[in-house]
Length: 501
Image (cartoon, rainbow, N blue to C red):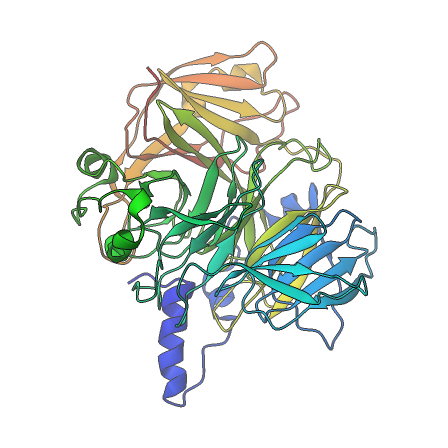
């Protein structure tokens, strides 16, 4: 059985109960080493800057929010909220101000009208400093529409949408069950405080928010009914794929009747015909090669301060202590897209990300006793763009005949025009109740022709076979820029649910 953070933690809890030692957090680092082998080159373009934490503080950051005055709000696993100043300084010596304490495992922060909205395991809470002394003195329950009683029942919260709604994604009970009310569901919480169940079938969310087009997405973790981590679109009335939470439909009349039970061992494409509420994986992150325990995500809206990836999604990975990119598009009414490697070498297991006012990418997290590649028990770190643009696949999109690949720099037109410069492969997974699953039904499509744009910034590939329900791998080891640079990362993965007409 594959071992990610969830299974490892359950196993080590049992070991600990017998009086044995929990495995050291360095075990995974010793096992896998460097994931992509590109860290030395990555630092030429994106530098990791540590934000020192005082020795008397434990800040296992699970959520961030940019405050209007330039400070960053940090919510922690222990239930504290700190306001951090100086996070953007060239040589940071940040100041930490405790704004609130006494909450529980914070995985969502959103600021509105001089109040901080905190998503914790048990509820969505509004924190207000009514006497302006710098500390929250009023804690109002905005929503406690779900149950909370056992391990793993995390709650992840979004930022506000344009209408003032917040969204919450709820993890299952003990990772496998739905023993408390609405565990495995998604909620919309309106400005009036009304809590509306909008989606069932979640397993173990790692983050919730909006994609570059403003649609609502969440991160799903590898496990039962999920052979790999993925990004999934949340549509109202949708079923996210794990039927263990069907038992709460009677408490959600707005959702309509309970969907048909999916067939274990089938495929998403087949089951979407049987179960119309079923939402497919929009972006699959190949297990180990990309994501192992993907967590919070954020969109680059920095206006170019962070380099050439404006309006793209950046996602952290807990187990592998790295950051990835993703892009999405809607085809025939269905969401799908691609994932790309970005930066490894972070110091701890990442739980969330946040862009600062100066366009720097802040990350934080913890090891919490699970094995992570980063060697620190917790940390706050920042990625700074050095001003140098890496030669990368900037974005992959699908076309009626194949794919378009856009680059951050012009390609060498002679190399780019050769079909043999592109090595493609595909695979899929079984959609089944077992934990995780292997990559199956591998194919090797061929590129029959290539059209290179006049500016050299994109190529159109005509591919002999594009397969619905398959992840399409792109390996461009031979590609060169017009200045004879190799790609910083020469592989990416696109999930095909639909093909344009």
